[in-house]
Amino acid sequence: MMANREAVLFANDAFYSAFAERDMAAMEELWATEAPVAVIHPGWQALTGREEVMESWQAILEGPNPPSITCHAASAHVCGEVAYVLCYEQVGGGFLVATNLFAREGEAWRMI
Image (cartoon, rainbow, N blue to C red):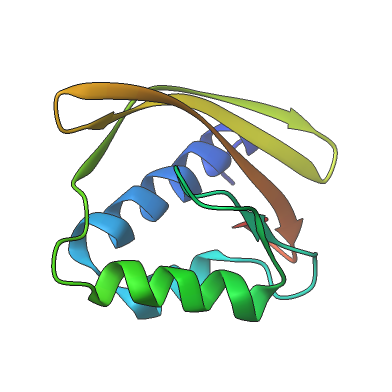
């Protein structure tokens, strides 16, 4: 069985792959269905609740010019049933610092 930190990093990689491939089905699968979820897209207000979060991803992924984002230097930190990944996101020529939060649902780590 994959160690928790590696499993969280795998889930984080799956998130960036779904984003790059504009794969809404994969994005839906990555987000928690039991735990409360929220997202803060750069330049947006905080969005809360699974429906609002998924609608935002659909708008971004199906939009005419979704940004190209690459994750760098990801590190996972696990505390029981929750975890976070700190990383740098390369967006165009600049970098952002990102924090991605996860909760364990069953055997999988899901974004929250």
